[in-house]
Structure formats: C-alpha cells, structure tokens
Image (cartoon, rainbow, N blue to C red; front, side, top):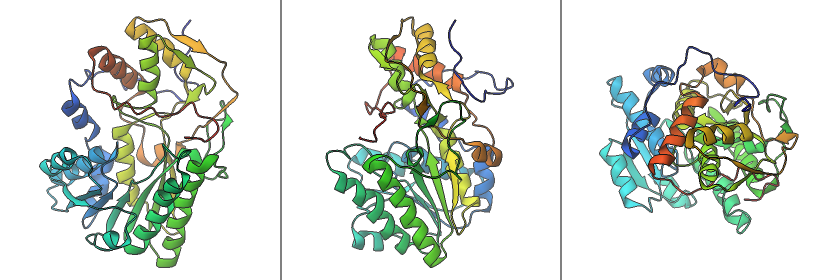
Length: 359
C-alpha cells in the first residue's frame, strides 16, 4: 500500500483538487501572484509604497506582482518598486510591463543602498545559499552586511525580512517540527549566516524602533523548482532517491508570498517571528510513490529514513493567516503533469537532502 503523503496534519476535505495544470509560464505566474483575501486585507490598510529588495530571485517577481495586483484591485496607487542587480534584462522588462517599478542596485554597495528611494514598507528577500562551501565569505557578506546597510537606510520603515527554517536543528520526524520559540541551532555557514541576518535586523530594529517581521520559510514550491520537482524528476528519470532525509515541509509559493505580505500587519519591536511552511510533515518516500503512480514510473530508493529532519511547525502562521490555498495533492498533481508536458525548469535543486549544512 502506498504510504500516506502526510505524517502530520492533513488538508480538510472541503478543499478539492480542481484546477487544471497551468499551461505555460505565464499561466503559472498568474496563479503564483494571485492575491489571497488575507493579503488583500493587509493591503487595504497598508499606507505608502513597497520596496521589494532582491526581487530578481525565484520568488521575488511573483511576490512583487501580487503586491501590484492587490493594490490595483483595491484601486490604490501605492508604488511597488523592485530592486535587484537585474543580470537578466528581460526579467526587469517583464516586471515593468506588469506595473512594477524597478531600480538596479547591488545591496552590498553602501552608496547604492543609500541612493534607493524612500519607502515606508520594505520586503527584504535578498540572500545567498548555494556556493557557500566554495566561498563562505560571499554568503556572509550577502546575508549579514547587506541587511545591516538596509536596516540602517530604512530605519523606522516597516520591514518584512525573509529568513529560513534552516536556523533550527533537525528534530524527530513525528515531533510536528520546530516552533518559533525553540532554540536556534544552525548547522554550517549558510544557516549561521541566516541567523546573522536575523540578529543584524533585530539589533537595528531595537536601536531605531523599526517594526520588523522575520519569515522563516521552509521550502516554497513552484512547478519549475522545489522539493517536489527534485523528487519527481528523479522518479521520471529512474534515478535513485536518497530517503535518508525522509521528511520535508512544502508550501505553494503563492501562499508563501501572500503570508509574507500579511506579515506587514504584524511587524513589531522586538520582531515578530513566524514559520512559513505547509501543514503536513511530508514523507519523501510517499511522494515518490505518488509521482510514480501519476507518471507511470517505479521509483528507485537508496538509504533508509533518518529519525530526524529539518521540519518547521507553522501553526502560528496557520492560526493568523489561515491554511494554504493550494493543497499538497494539488501541488503533486500539477508537478507531475508539468514534467510530463516538458514544462520549463529552472534546474536549481533545493539541496533538501543535505544534512551537514554544506551547500
């Protein structure tokens, strides 16, 4: 019998799998950037422009577009300003075509950060994870020095800063995951620099009375990248799936975007800290079996499940923001169909299997 997808909370039955798989990147981005009722409620009361720092990353474009769509739906003229290095000019053009203003900036350049436009609302999404083992100093600069420059430049603004669930220790797989009140026990340069980012933002929040929220995200899912794509690709290719890291959390990127927006309603001094993750403790082995059913492939496994994994308890987020709008089974079905159709992939593995903190 195929194992259950969830080892923890499950999706209420009133949320059926209903939508067809997005036909292309444009349709996918439309779903990822749909403002939820909760996000719209936050935008109703949000005064002033929003600066999205690190908008060029995997989540940034759809989050910026969600903000723009939300303000437009509420007939509000607040500007959404996306900031990045913009090494891909087409990405910048797409954002501007969707009503997002753009500014090119290296966030490690003090003069460039000082020259950024004023904004009462700042979403900090910039960071570095992969390549840390080869050049840890670059990760530390991006994850701690850039936040220091931003925190000082936007003293007094409302800041929502992305962090990561990697700041926690591995916990027993049936524990329900780490809570925000648990001690942080980062492993490796990336996770330690992520704690550094949190500490830097917190220091300046206290010093400058800057209302702050820290978003500890644990695996956002897009059909072009993410844990589900990593597992599904191996199933489809007949490659072994190492199940030593046997359990994960996943959340639809659109829901993660919306919850980050809602954090503007909760910024505080000392900072509001929240885990953003799906409600399930998801079995990697069960995922592989389900993908095998959907793609007519027999999954191949290696290793045995460890008793611990990097897991987050997102109960606080669910209580404040509600359940994610896209269910796990929906994400799985979409991912399988996207791969079968030959949908575009970013070819950026998550490294979810990593247990030693080396990326």
